[in-house]
Length: 290
Length: 253
Image (cartoon, rainbow over all chains, first blue to last red; front, side, top):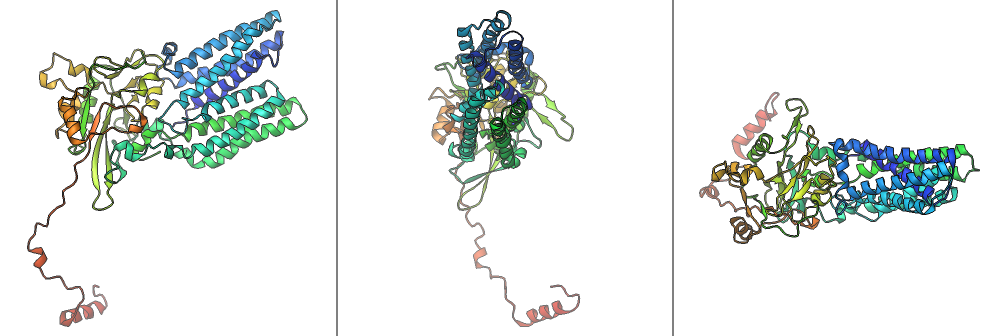
């Protein structure tokens, strides 16, 4: 799959923003006044900024409002509804803290649940796709949730929780990579089933339908970047999990905390790039590529 | 409405004969022509006369080489367009309801004025049947020439998809695959028509007919076996002369 910067930025930052809203919602930190305003601004900048970035990959962004209609079948629609509902609820909760110094606890809990729901529905957009066997697995939502809550804990300064969740997310990421590498082969979809010609013999793509490239090849076949996958995985693990954990274990200071956060975000961007670049869409089989 | 209908009155679709297709790409061109000049946004090209041309097509012809365990390889031309699946994954993922499957004939269509160009339907399609038009920003796909097949302004013989009408080899057939007595259904039954990627669970309406087994060519030249074999090891004067001349400076080996 083509690793579009808009979608990488969207999943990374909105995951982080909704993760922070989760911790604010459950009352792990209950700031008030100006401090509350700063906390909520950070959360909304990340969450809303991410959501806005996602509209850049639309062909017709001016019609984005229409995407809220088909929640009965579409995970993308459900995600949009979850995101807007969560942002509205948490805005009321945040206003209570900023202006009235009053935590409206039930609203916070609902908002926290909504934040988890938003991250889950985002992950299901990918996990639902039978056409991308690497994504169609329970590890996709599990990892999105672990990274969101873990990153949120880091941002919210919840050191113990962040240590546990980042360790968990790192382990889960290794497991996801190891099992994901063979999932296309296990899916049973190959050139023989794609063409239905396997009963005659071994199928090889002889001539593509056109001399140039096309939308399908640009969107679904991404071979060039994959050759550095091994190195990038190590960088992602080091930057996303190992370094932040080391920084958190050092005697606490805001500098180490800030470095842990920056390192974590850089790591998540790298592993999200890999999430797309390494995902093989079965349509590539028609072109004899993965 | 992105919920799929439980059943459709008809299952209009194509049957593509991989035995007959000669790979001429006429269906590709007639499809592009009809669907650029008629219903919906035109199928745009980018840099059409430049070094790196690209464009939107609703139908593309691949060519595959298939190598059996024994014998010579076969070249098989393979046209591919939307299969109008009964369980179309492209429809249910659509967030706006722009993608839908018609109850009356099972055709999968896109309402272009509702499409936001999120590409998720193209992601969900295993066949590469949907392409986002780079100029218009909306998803394009085969309409089964819905503006031809019911079009009373056209002569009766033209009321079939442009690709079927134009195919010079008669490799493409159009009809109701939900009716077991229709010509296309009979063809599928007789020739062992199959689904592409059945394991994806999309239940495609379009079917493909497999190439017929190749004949074994008989030996036509009845005299050939009686011809004397050409000498490979030399003896006698001619061989001596050949060796001697080759050994001379400048002699050809």
